Length: 488
Image (cartoon, rainbow, N blue to C red):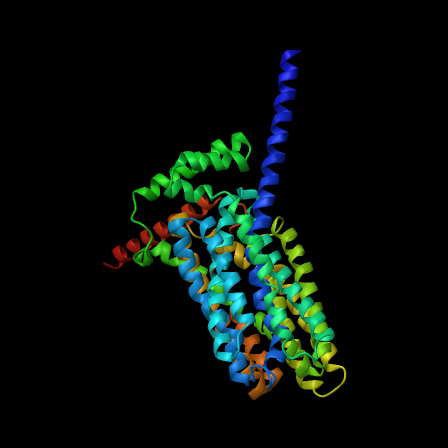
């Protein structure tokens, strides 16, 4: 009888532990992903703000200065990704996110009160530093807090918050633009709203724990175990701390991560794959739609107010598609999801190219363009974007995770910067149809990259993935030595 009671108590205690750890993980994910919400809002708000800030009595923007205002954030983000990743390795993921919240707040105020285009560009660069830092640090923090079987869902919550931030930006843009559109400085109100989530992120992260993997590598195994006991079942925490400790001991025998590590073949291969993942997500042209959607719809035939409302459809489909992506990640491999996603985005762009040529000047064109941009974003946000950020958080060994993600996301943002800077110039010089044709060609290249170079990461722990890359490099080296011996 006592044994039965003890077993029941053990089962009840285990269920309580699971409930408590899951609740804590949910809170951690919600608070930390306010960094993603800010990322989304600050990149999306420019979509509706540009037509108003570009007016002669405001910042008086040309196609080139318009591109500079939109893309300056992305230039800052590229450097924010590099410095944010390295800083997160040195002082911890949590502390960096707290500092980023302060930077988000200050830079947002600077943009909101900018008196001219020069000041706007400067503060957009600072805002970009925060966005880039968040794009690296938040996924890394989530990946290290999550158990292997929940890592996909937790990391992808950041992508959900990014598109939610963009949807909020489009919604506020449409409301403010349609209700107060006659007021030229309405764009300032659009921008300043982003200070609210920055404050929430700062206060929230003060109460969040540090990553146990970072603590194990930089502070102590004991503190790492204490955090794991809060966010895992007891048995799971004990098993995981042993795995982490082995990884830390292995890393302790090596030098600290630096760019010299790129001379090691297996590390160089991972970094190049990560770099490629970051680049191909951007060459679909997704952010030409996210940043210039109002202008694309206006070019197709909508008025400014109607285009602002139309952009809400892009935001809604992005959020809904991200939910689909989160659901798919638990059931489908990363590689097939990316392949289908890129096929879908490229096909949508082919149709956009054809439609823009055949129906140019007709009343049907703006509605067809809106339908196809929504279709494009469905594939992008359900497959391409969530898998991109998840794989970037998965493939790098913990010793070089900050540096590796920093390099990969630097090229991601530089590609984004290039696309955003050139898009309004291309739209003005070669038109909508030819501009999208360029993205079609790049999209085909992205499909080939995924099929040839990407590994499958679903269902593997971070330590298992590292071991796989080491083994592959060792096998390749042995094969090369064998070939050289045969030639001799």
